[in-house]
Image (cartoon, rainbow, N blue to C red; front, side, top):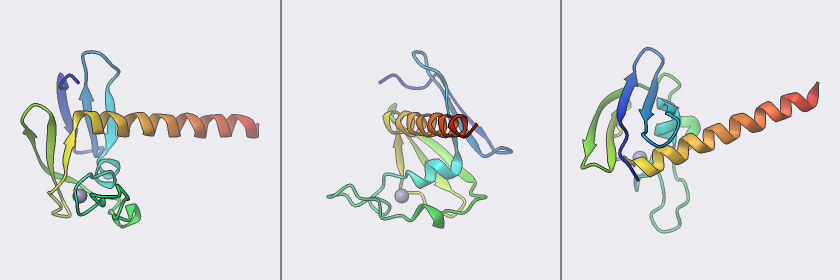
Length: 114
Ligand SMILES: [Zn+2]
């Protein structure tokens, strides 16, 4: 997996944007990224089951600080002070793909209702 060419944090829209050499940009709301935090507090390490209730993540969650972990991941501290999540490029791209798939399903549903 290639590292992103660029990582932008859009504070005003609360979006994280990653641009890739080989794919369309991944644009993710901060809240969605936080809801998909892969750390041991949020996900059961053994079963892979999500412990975090996504609804408990504040709507207005901000990204307090982000730094690179080697060349494979982004370490993020959120405005709710949660900072144990390490978001690998693979994981962030998967979140983006899941989000796009969900958006396409919604569009298809809307079309059927017409
Ligand atoms: Zn976490």
